[in-house]
View: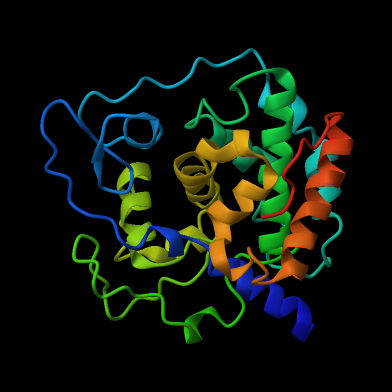
Length: 267
């Protein structure tokens, strides 16, 4: 259990470590303000997550039905591998996931049908790893961690709140709870606990993080999604065991969904 707990905790540190150094834009009118707060005029600045300026429109969606791909059998096949006493059972439901997806029409519906199935497989591979097959709602030993970036004045910490990992892709750090709450419609800085008590908001935080930070790198292979999620904590030799775990789940889910994994599996 100690080893598994270590993997979960390592996985949880991912949310936003790569995105601490956001700046206020103040761009000229001909430039875009990127999701990280910098000015520019190419896809990295004007594409997914663009805050203001001449932002590019979202890519067209295809006709894939996420509900058809994420069947009861597929979803329950993940949940059923967790212990019957896990707190996540009954909290993480397919119905809550599909309702949350309604707020993110780009999820699983960009590119070819194979692209869509591969994205869905990738999402659930990371979720399975982060939550232990939908067992954990909150980070193991989360309250003992320090997830307040005091240098981030845009999303200042409430000293009485903890910004440790919560949800399917465990949201952590004040600089993620703040913007996630603004986007979804809850007070992320003063009520972070809602991510662990409201299953709809919980899934929506995972999809918010995914579509903001992970979806833009899907074309680079599954390894790029690991890097977008956990960066140096796992990649470049940081923790090859957790990388292997994520790749194993991804490969399994691709097989279940009838799609190839593509290249660049590791980061």
